[in-house]
Image 1: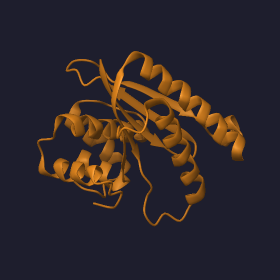
Image 2: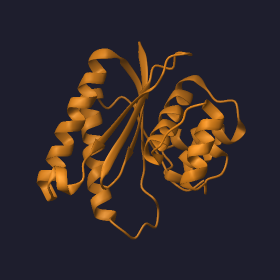
Image 3: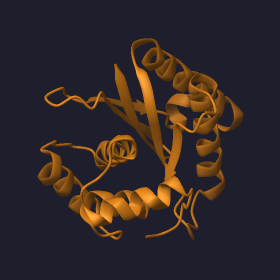
Image 4: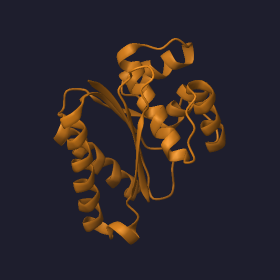
Length: 183
């Protein structure tokens, strides 16, 4: 059975959402605590995160035909935690490609692209994202990280199955071209 995965990584936690794309089948959520208090610091923390992601992705690969993995890219111009977020992004990419290979399944979507795909505007607030995910797909989240991961997963599904709305198609074109820029 095919599956689509969205990953919203942050300094303290990873939100992962996956779904088979089948109507009436619920998505699954994973919220992993990778805070320094739990996962240590520096290289030990990166190793902890890498091993946890490998286990999560291996389990998905055993159960599903993972068609697309879409992770949130970096926020251009971000001033805080750039190096740490870069390391987390690299560890995530490494784990994805170790399990799923280098065959184009991994896509990167800029934070503004995710917002635009979900809301129609690339500058939506966290609250607007939560509300828009609910309005658009009828799925409610208590965590904006999970809502973002859900939007990323929906981008993956649309990359395989198409999109109806012009702003969604614009986001898909940018993601396909590897443009991790603001939309």
